[in-house]
Image (cartoon, rainbow, N blue to C red):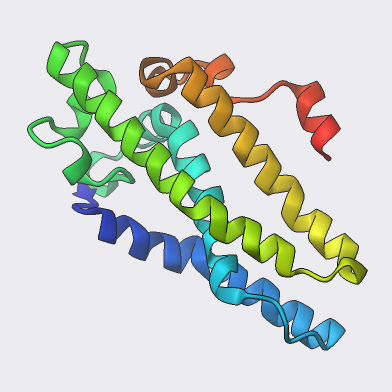
Length: 179
């Protein structure tokens, strides 16, 4: 099993998986619309927020899906968030230590998402109004992610780590209203 060790490892993962999103989308707008005024650096924050949301809401599903292939498993939660507990204990154990580790890990993931919120908003604000389709394309998943975080924070770490669908997914009507 390979694990991320630190917050920096997670940020590196985000850069390669999702952070390039802001730069890539900015290049698309630059190429198609001739606009050079988007803030690609803050666009990376949007990728981070979206990826953090997916990792956090899918903690249990990811653990269960990879359980058949233990040698190739990757835990997307940095070990520094849950010292003294192994990944299986973090996900499945009911001990006091495991519950505390889940709470600390969830708080750390929530804090990371919050730390990228302002950059994402600045990116969205950098999109000119005449690019309204592109702005909507970016705004819809961001609002969905923020509403998902509200639900997860309200539900708490135990429900999120257990994969409780009501704790990690917004209502369909709410999603339709966002779109």
